[in-house]
Each structure stands twice: as C-alpha cells, then as structure tokens.
Image (cartoon, rainbow, N blue to C red; front, side, top):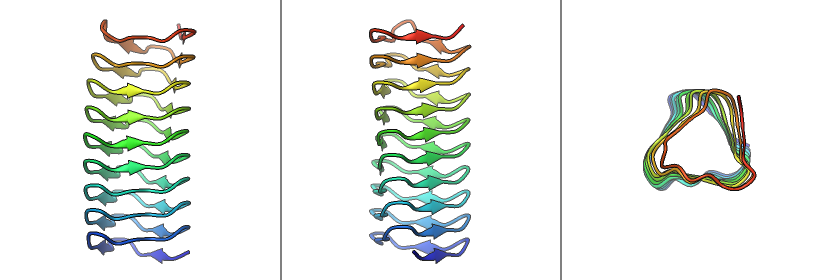
Length: 168
C-alpha cells in the first residue's frame, strides 16, 4: 500500500508488495518483482525479466524490456511497448496503439484496442477479441472462438481457428 513519487528510480532485484502506486516516469532495474493490484503512471520503464502480479494497471507509454512476465487481468494504456519474449497473462486489456515485438504471447480472453501492431510469429490465445484496424504479422496463430472487429487485416499465412467471427 505504498505510494512512490514520480521519477523514482529503483535498482535491479527490488521486490514490491501489493497495492502500490507509482508516479509518472519511474524507472526499474532488471529482475524487479511486483505484487498484485499495482498502478503505474505514464512513461515508466521496466528492466529485463521483471515479473508482475495480477490486476496491474499500466499508464500511457510504458516500456517493457525483454523476458518480462505480466500477470492476469492487467490493463495497458496507449503506446505501451513490449520487447521480444514478453509474456502477457490471461484477460489482459490493451488500449489503443500497443506494440508487441516478435514472439510475444497473449493469453486467453485478451482484448486489444484499435491500431495495435503485432510482430511476426505472435501467438494469440483463445477467445481473443480484436477491435477495428488491427493488423497481425505473418504466421500469427489465432485460437478458437476469436472475434475480430472491422477493418482488421491479416497476413495470408495466418492460421485461424474454428468458429471465428470476422467483422465487416
């Protein structure tokens, strides 16, 4: 239940409990661990292999370095950027303009906002819902019962699961 001011810098390996709040522009070293129900401000930067708990809310333009692991029920704001090898948990909600590097994996029940860009070889979980104007890279694998919004463009080499409903 701690509140950390904007611009705070934390060394690698720092562990945080549940229900913390961080101001804008905080920087975290590698291997930091975070509990659940944490709120982050805008423009936070996270080092490699950071691990996050459940129900975290990330501010605009947060940057995640490689091999980060994000728990379930997380919410991401606009212009968040994920490096390669990030793993995203179930039921995460992504707002507009999120960018994912290659090999990022989204979990079950994910909702992605408009203008989301996915790198090649992304694996998308079952029951994902995509809003309009989403574009998936080559070799994207989409799970069963997916719902895609309007104006979504898909590479010819994408594999679609059964029972997918596509927007107009």
